[in-house]
Length: 197
Image (cartoon, rainbow, N blue to C red; front, side):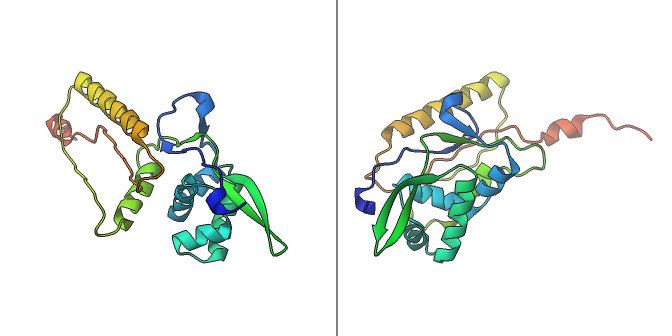
């Protein structure tokens, strides 16, 4: 089937918060972590969000060698993140069209000192964005009560849902990435009494 006539795919996404157990693929194995912890494979998932594609089409859209595209597609398929959704005969050769399942991908939360895959992949895309691309990025150091922190999280979740509802496949790509967290509080550490030894 021609790529232009391919069915519209579902809209998968990476998340640290599961919507519902049946709507999410939980990343639990080393093989799955290995598959997602690579920028090229992350971008292949982005390509497939726009519709099923062959290894050759993926290579052309990402500007990588066909052999590299084939390798990364196989890694993702073996880990269960993509699968063949259609085939087409071209000059006697069967071309495979890969697509994404209708599920979000739930990443494990890294412990202290462990990689935060979602953050690293998002940052890699920010750094690779075209110089002329629209972008708004901010960092604000705050001190919030537990109640205010929870309220901020709820507002961010609401904004995430609002933007998801506005998603239009016919429009240019846009990513929304956010995190609010409690960092090491160095003021608290400095206020602890010294221990004589």
